[in-house]
Image 1 (cartoon, protein in one colour):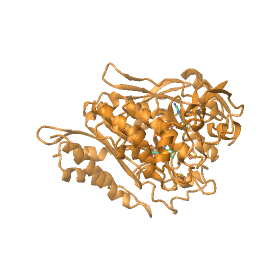
Image 2 (image 1 turned 30 degrees about the vertical axis):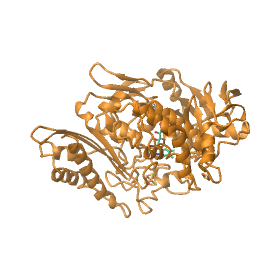
Image 3 (image 1 turned 60 degrees about the vertical axis):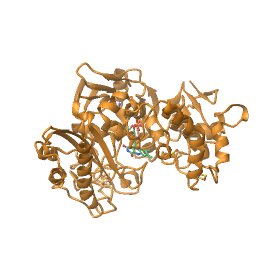
Image 4 (image 1 turned 135 degrees about the horizontal axis):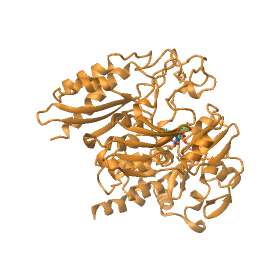
Amino acid sequence: MTPFSFARADDAAAAVRMGGAPGAKYLGGGTNLVDLMRETVEQPTSLVDVTGLGDAIEERADGGLLIGAAARNTAVAGHRTVRTRYPALSRAILAGASGQIRNMATMGGNLLQRTRCTYFYDAAARCNKRVPGAGCDAVEGFNRIHAILGASPACVATHPSDMCVALAALDAVVHLQGGAGTRSLPLVDLHRLPGGRPDMETTLEPSELITAVELPALPMAARSTYRKVRDRASYAFALVSVAAALDVAADGTVRDVRLALGGVAHKPWRAAMAEQALRGQPATEASFRAAAEAELADAAPLAHNAFKVELAKRTITAVLAELTGDRA
Amino acid sequence: MTITINGQQVAVPSDPRVSLLDLLREHLHLGGSKKGCNQGACGACTVLADGERILSCLALAVQYEGRSVVSIEGLSPDGSLHPLQHAFIEHDGYQCGYCTPGQICSAVGMAGEAKRGLPSAVTADLAADAVQLTHDELRERMSGNLCRCGAHNGIIAAIADTFGRPAVAEAAE
Ligand SMILES: Cc1cc2nc3c(=O)[nH]c(=O)nc-3n(C[C@H](O)[C@H](O)[C@H](O)COP(=O)(O)OP(=O)(O)OC[C@H]3O[C@@H](n4cnc5c(N)ncnc54)[C@H](O)[C@@H]3O)c2cc1C
Ligand code: SF4
Ligand code: FES
Ligand code: FES
């Protein structure tokens, strides 16, 4: 590990001040950053520990829920309100990593965890994300776990977070604090597609701090879930995952739907086309399948991951059917 | 600047690169916690921080200043065995023993999570208050601890014997 200095931030303003120093990085639970520092993929010269900042989970007057960025993954997944009103979020968090890692990992760190592309981790491989302009060994290499949507010739990596997929489906908003003040933005606008700059993963300003994640009041989210398909039953990253919420009217048509995919793109993928295709349609497997087809129409699989296209379609269809089945 | 380790105050290392695992093993010569992978994938380094199970290989020691860490050496006082350690012996919960300290610390933390009603990925009803530590629940909750010797059946049996039944009984109340 490259040497670095360490400081604990007592409040967000102090964190942003220290985070503005050249070479500084925020440190959450360290479960991703410490690993990447050991591999020398990340080489910060100072770490600003932000785990002492806001970790409260508060119900808001407007019916939403505000989750401090330092809240541990375990605390969020186990929170009563999350379990009953936003079950997809509990399920997504619980589907990720292990009990030990979820106890350490924070909300902020989970959002900004980096890809698990093996070439990104391997200092001997060419990777545009690690070394801009170096080339990408995954495009022609072993790319079974890589993206099928929104990728570019420069990078075909996926975003690995389970939690983010649920947040994308549930219209979450991210609260930020930077040198220029505070702002907020929809979670779906936090991460970027790779384009020509896969090293630029988010729309954050340098040293901008995530302070909280807000879930809007979304009554239909009480009927939401998350399904993750992976190579072993537990403790593995998603090949494909689906977060969905479904509101079916009394006449059996889809009144409203929220749908997002994981494991398929450089960012948590809100399936807006499928949602649009479904609203007003009968809540049947045929409609679900048609919506899935619409979303995956532009899929561009690589040499080893064509299976993800059909897997995504089937998982979308099955998850929506499951949410319909519960209705009786 | 100290960390409490197994009840003793220990100075925080001056180099922030030192992991909690290296502090235990290299600086304090507490060799129970193992360095299986040093990247979060095996669970052999699991310890308890203020009662919660964490991976000491991914923890920078300096981040744990002021906290209380318990490793396998401190799980029960004065060289006596924790009930779960007895159960591991009884159920053949190990072969080479390399993963065992991590398994045991993890299971103790896991039992605390279950007692607090924390659901897992296989919990059918997220709204339920009590957790029933069934075989499937135990396997899922312990999936962050790998065993290369394949002693999982004995491990799960030992944990079920120690923590499974009381939790089921509580749930039935
Ligand atoms: C073996 C293993 C298996 C895993 N399996 C899964 C899985 O199946 N699914 C899954 O979703 N994840 C998985 N993970 C990843 C895990 O979820 C992440 O490592 C974790 O969520 C990161 O959170 P952290 O607080 O530890 O972040 P850190 O490692 O501390 O930080 C990660 C990044 O976030 C930045 N950061 C942290 N907090 C803030 C903030 N408040 N504002 C701005 N930037 C911030 C840091 O600078 C750093 O760049 C796995 C990890 C391991 C090691
Ligand atoms: S896919 Fe992206 S992260 Fe992986 S090697 Fe290519 S540029 Fe790097
Ligand atoms: S040594 Fe820490 S998880 Fe393997
Ligand atoms: S007993 Fe040998 S690794 Fe588990």
